[in-house]
Image (cartoon, rainbow, N blue to C red):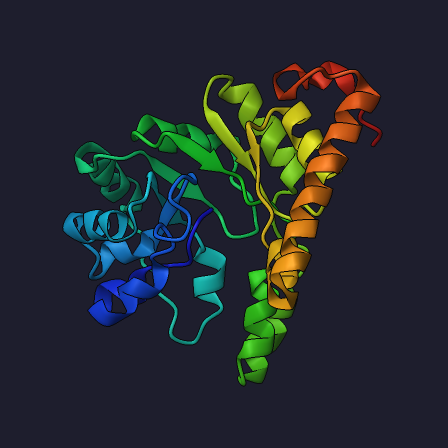
Amino acid sequence: MGVGSQRIGIEEDMRMETFNIRKNAPDILLFANLGAVQLNNTITIDDCKKAVDAIGADALIFHLNPLQEALMEDGDTNFFGILNKIEEVCKHLSVPVVIKEVGWGISAQAAKKLIGAGVKAIDVAGAGGTSWSEVEKFRTKNPVLQRIAGGFRGWGIPTVETIVQIREELPDILLFASGGLKSGIDITKCIALGANLGGIARGFLIAALNSQETLDAYIEELMLQMKVTMFAIGAENVGAISSEKIVRID
């Protein structure tokens, strides 16, 4: 599980406790989260350590959201030199750094630069799920920004394509698939395409807002669907899922 941006917890100490889910989930793989652009503003390496330590995180995610920031009236668009700042954090942080987009995908070229800077994993967060340009279109009251944001409705690298492109260029890295995944079938397909993990947000949120029982049932359904998919393609375990098990139809 990855928490939301902890920037508010860095700026207001009393808010950081709201991110601390480790006490309720002692054994899960847990990711801290900050916006990479904030490294050009007020966030320091010590703040990154604070975000990790405050929730007992196993790694720190930096999210990249330049398009979203550009569509916000008060957005932070100074991404100049961010790669160097990320590299410095990678050198001084005791846990791995993960980079993710927020719904528009990461190109293979960008992934290579990030891995070269010391990043240990890439979450593609490709196009196909939540569009934050659409979120900003409906959030702003500025009609000009609404029209501009609307033009980016189909923007980004689709999740499938960014997985394939990155895996071809970087065969050995840890690669997360997210962006429009809705089912155990989707997760299995992404693993077959080259991802190591699959991430879903919306389905979990909707189930959790309903009840604990609905959430438990949703998790069981995802797991069973993955098992049935693996059975159908003859994959004995997750490690046996490979591109040989799927056929791409364009």
